[in-house]
Amino acid sequence: MGAIVAIVGRPNVGKSTFFNRLIQRREAIVDAVSGVTRDRHYGKSDWNGRDFTVIDTGGYVVGSDDIFEKEIDKQVELAIDESDAIIFMVDVESGVTAMDEDVAKLLRRHNKPVFLTINKVDNAMREAEAVEFYALGLGDYYTVSSVNGSGTGDLLDALIESLPEEVEAEPNELPRFAVVGRPNAGKSSFINALLGEDRHIVTDIPGTTRDTNDSRYNRFGFEFNLVDTAGIRRKAKVREDLEFYSVMRSVRAIEHSDVCLLIFDANRGFDGQVQNIFG
Image (cartoon, rainbow, N blue to C red; front, side):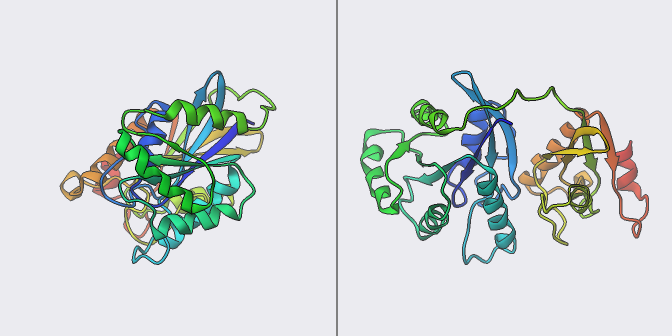
């Protein structure tokens, strides 16, 4: 197994932008709306010849009015449990916030390497302002700019040093099975039932899954990737830019999969929208 690195922090500090930079693809949705990333999101990265898996997580929040807060926080804790090292991202523009302190408190409970990473540091003045983050009690920090990549090399050099030795080579590319359908048809619940764990956030609210998410599945001597996708609505109903990106991501997942499982709600039947997706 390769090493796993989790990127955690409060919402809107630039975790997904940094994630995209590490995996060198626009895999995670990036938007100015707080709370865009809800599920854990996986990607492959490498630095100086060392491969590792990166997990992008939903912003960790305590005491907000976001109905997804409890589920996002659970996903963050799962990502921390799964990882060998943690990049804790904060934002120099906002300075130390109460939410940053909550995340720091959570991380201090885990005996894992934590790399305090201060984002949006792109000039000398902001470099000087970064010293206030010593108050989080996590020791030295790294200053980066997710947008232009400055400072990333020093962080990755230190990160690679902390990772455990690789045990075996990664297997070849696995077949991809995409689970698709209209919103709230039960796609995430179906995948959770197969995996036997709460891998994906499940609520009764349509549109809970916004990105596509891969999960490795190994049963009956076969191994493949299960891909959970955002629900696909009719174009007239896609109002948010964010949802538009999600639908495009789902369409791309269909194109790049070997098999598609079309899930629909028996109560609604094989209606026009399901037929469109089938088409």
